[in-house]
Length: 135
Figure: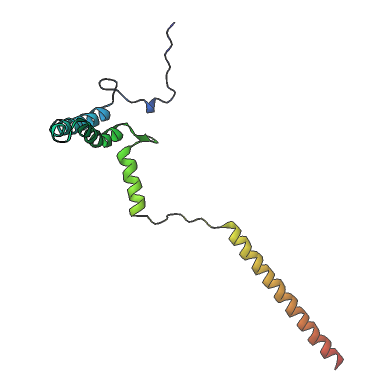
């Protein structure tokens, strides 16, 4: 009996247009071919076949990368745009957390200062009271 696996999340399934490729992949591969093949045919005689192939590959690789790369459901150009935007124009922080330990440490210092002041004030007034009793 034939077995076909069905994905649980159908939102991640992409429609294939032709040759089991998505529309995005077809467009990027077509642009890569339109740029790479003429460069190869125009440069293979002057610089040699091996060097022409390397130049063609170097020109086509960015388009292959854009066609195939995807991170967290975002295509390559959006990921690159987000990285550049964060590096060049860091935004203001919308939410700033408060350090709980810093707050507790500050409270502990305030309590210690108040206790010290209470001890100092209490002993001074007691001494004055005793001094007044002797007179």
